Image 1: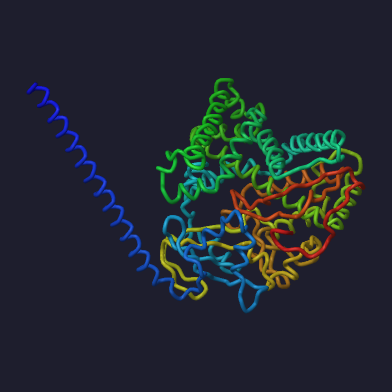
Image 2: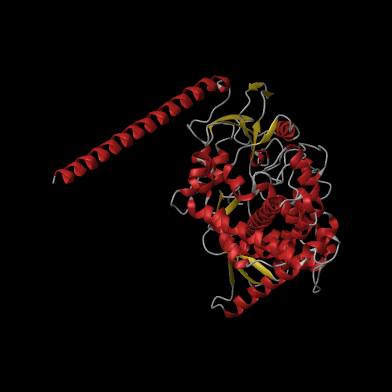
Length: 535
């Protein structure tokens, strides 16, 4: 009996001791968090004095507005307008803290864009833990310095003229099949139409990028669903930035759920690399034999490219190669649905240049009006409306001295909608890009003409870190547009509720389009003046 009592007393003591230790640990953790938050708050306020001369947004953390899924990107960017000159945008604005505490300063004038984009010694990549998790911190998009230069040199051949020409027929075959599927839907539909949404264009561009980059050796439908779970979860990237690596273990679809999908995608690419090594296709690629898709070219680099880097670059190409083009095609179809006159002019050009024969590589360069349409869509509805950079040292811009650690936002979309650089910037006017109109910009290697600053139009950025795949994306979009619009009319399905929201790119929320055989489309909206987000 005494022994049992002793054991019970000992167990109680152990439990009490454990409870005390647990309480002390909880108090200690709470105290540490309080001290850390207090220190961070004091440090933030102390650093804030260096930004006190800047014009400020009224809200405490306006960065949230950029990713607001209800108000949209248009409402966010319009808050940058100059209250005294509504057609112009403020050139510099203090945006307050970002998700990890760094101060954000937004710039919207082209002259500042030029200075920041060409000064890689002062301005480097901004921290983005979510993107690093997805495509790797050493990938071309996320790396810097010598590693970035080496990666850029290795990957550049993928986008040479000869490489773009080599994948052209593959793009056409897939785009034509999709157009044929539309015809089948029209024939079997009660309304004699085919309905397309942003998700449909996502699936189409995913099929194209997998065929061009990986010789169609992935399960396209699975990959499309997997990427959708990642890219539609803006809260994963925000949470990963705020909480850090622990976010990946929180049992929620926008935390652990996304992290698990990303691991699956990584394993798929690694398995394909292993399969090619086993089959000897990597050796064939090094010797100039066999298929020359993106992964072959990466594997041909040999020891210069580790498996981890090959996976990172493959995922970079998958993400940028389908999401950017999908957004561009979706916005273009939307703009065409709102402007039947532009749609008809585009179709007339397609008839004149292509006629009834198959689309060829040389045709794309002859479709001048289509180029104008695409450029105007990129101006009004850019897939990347802003770009961020991190100041690696103290700097001076626009008359302000700002400290190291500042996050600068380059508001490309604001400059592309500013009356100082564009006539009637709110209007969808492809004709502004016609030859001789004086619209060459830095993004196209042009010089300043008339009111146009060379950095006033940067849908693919500029400088040494400009988008390496922009020609691929534009060719892919042109192939899809030509393959569809030569056969079909497009109109909005129902009421126009489209708005631009920022996910991985700026995408048209609520987009639903009706495609019918040419000459039978009853447009729901007549042509006229429109604004961004409702172009």
